View 1 (spheres, rainbow, N blue to C red):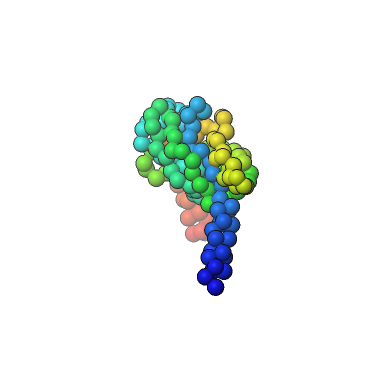
View 2 (view 1 turned 90 degrees about the vertical axis):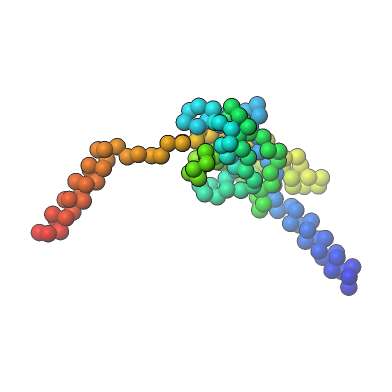
Length: 154
């Protein structure tokens, strides 16, 4: 009975290891990360995402001059060819996202494939300034609200 339980446990562990892909969390030799058009300073955080607000894997900090390198990261539940975004923020918690890119993850197969690399040309420009509406937008909203009030009174 012990051998059976041990065999089942080993089988579950080996199957769960196949349900994850790996990718290098590094842009050394690739496009730099920028903040409002300038090279991102040290301490800026980057991470992969499958969509807006859907972060996956571990995060890395910018080392300096817009470059980051944190080795390979495991993306649980993702295998094969996937669409990812590079996400980043400057400490304010407001994440900015790159355009989606397609990559074939490593880590699956026997023997496991090496981690995928970040494709060339993936650019991330983090917006550090909050979006402030133009005065004309605010005036138009007030004018529309006033028109709704007068229409309601008649």
